[in-house]
Amino acid sequence: MIHRHQLGRVPPKPHTAFYEDGRLLMEQCHTREGFEGPFSILYYRVPPTDEHAVEGLALKGFCPFEPAAEQALHRRHLKTFELQVSGDFLAARRTLLFNSDVHIGMARPTERSARFFCNGDGDELYFVNRGSGRFETLFGVLPFREHDYVHVPRGTPYRLHWDGEAPDLLVFEGRGYIDIPREFRNRSGQITMYAPYTHRDFRLPESLLAHDADCHGKAPYQLVVKRADELTVHLHEHFPYELVGWDGYVYPFAFNIHDYQPKTGLIHLPPTIHITFAGNEFVVCSFVPRKVDYAEGAIPCPYGHASVHMDEILFYVAGNFTSRRGISNGSISLHPAGIPHGPHPGTYEKSIGTDRTGELAVMCDTYKQLRMTKTAVGIEGPDYHLTWVAKEG
Image (cartoon, rainbow, N blue to C red; front, side, top):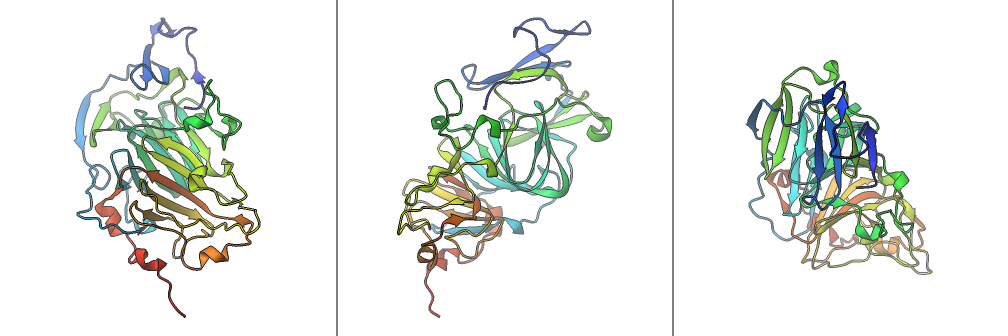
């Protein structure tokens, strides 16, 4: 929820008669937290309730997914680049880690999709590890490019199209919410001057979605809805996403990680100084190329620590991550609460005297334990927990 936005035509006042060519349009209020939170108001030519059939659907590995049978407490390395998947952005989506607040997975589609998707369980935050294209959404067309975060609010029908090479996408499903952290807003809701980004950094839907027979095909049009971790397919005889207009505070948006403005101190600051988005009992942080700690004798490499209340994952995107060995683009490290973690042997002292870091990574800290799925077990690298053991020679 960034600021008020409008696309298309809306009447001067909400909840009043609004006609197009003599026909009364259907108003729909898209609300959050009942009627207490942010909302948008949309105007339809055909009511969105005009469905013709509902069918069940299962997409194994995404919905439903299978939890790992057991999960011993140690540090882990998931190689997402080894995922063997195919299909559209839903069929090629896999949940890897989860708790009651957030589900974390990957989507690596190989086919373009005729169907739309609506997540009724939570907000979604995509990170585009590779690729570019557009999200076609109920609120309009939102282009995306490499290293974008794309936020899709709960209850928003959308589908994904890409240009050129198929995309590689990290996906967070925030079961409560995903939003700008409260500390980055003033009492009027404006993003403050102390925040690591500005209103100008966020990109919003550019145009309303219009039906294209070549692109969208013919009826019935499929909308896959996720609710309570079950999928249903809702069939429409008309194209249900062509609006006359809408306005409000709820809509998808994009933000590129390279527009994040990192903070640097005389000595090393804790990783949560890089917070970008907040959810219920979890945060998402961005590590970007930056000047590092500049006091004499400062150690830029992260210190070892034992966070006894939070699990931590890192998704490695690009660059040389100063504290890690054996990690590559697409790796996910899981450092669970209860055991310490820190820089690999040799990296701590080696970092002294450096003035910049070129790392690019996405971090997620969660209060509740992250459980692995069977898919995650299948792409886990062996013996990562033991790579901290110093070896002679």
